[in-house]
Length: 332
Image (cartoon, rainbow, N blue to C red; front, side):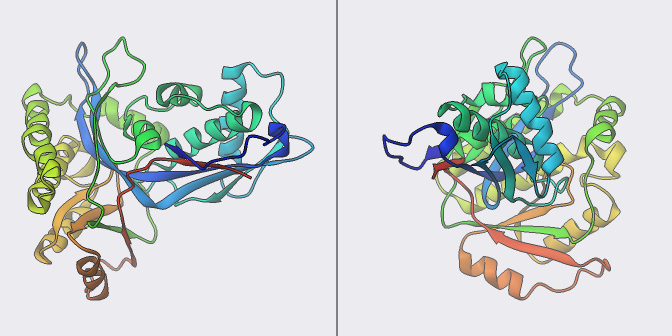
């Protein structure tokens, strides 16, 4: 996580505005769930430069939230107050100035919660939280901790999953992602993945992941994905991501109807494969799909020449870069 330099005479924290700009994330899939004694969840994902989640606290006479996601900001702010045992919430207006839609697979809820906790603490005390504590403050990372560590460090995140005795999965590995590569995000204009009670119910209904499958997923990470990244080998990395995403998604076949969430997404993946793109996957529950390109020019050409997928849905296609930095905090 990076912070813009500030002067030493910043004054009373309540006289300054605090802004947090956090990356969103792709999640390639979980390693395990339903394991009664061993590690559950875990997985691998990648932080994105865009879209971003931006939260700003501005001095005010009383605490208030405004604008898009104001109710969620208020909930996270109350969690911050409960955790810190502050007598009152800071006298500021808390607002989301930029954010993607929720429940499209980009991890908005986690980044919104972490950004709120960091913004309020910086506004009130001029100090921040550690990665794990920040997640505990706003009750995130119960399943995936990719966004928790990605907020702090950026890059490609691997987390092994948490034991029953652990609150949050430990960080296994963090790696830089090649700066010249690009990612295409492809999603329908309307639609969302599972969330809330529906997501919780899904995890109670789906059969546990076998140890064999978990071992296969770990092998893809350790013997293909990470060595490929070390060598900046585009085809090794994208082949690994696509294999991992399909295998991890197959664990949810009872709910999704295939490795991807629903008939249209499964058909769209086949369509993308026929177009010859690399590293196709579904982020979290979707409906966002992704694929990779080894240059900005190749990604732009893909978007410019993309044919209709005959689904009847209008598609939104964004070309983005990986974020190797993490959240940026600024004071004004």
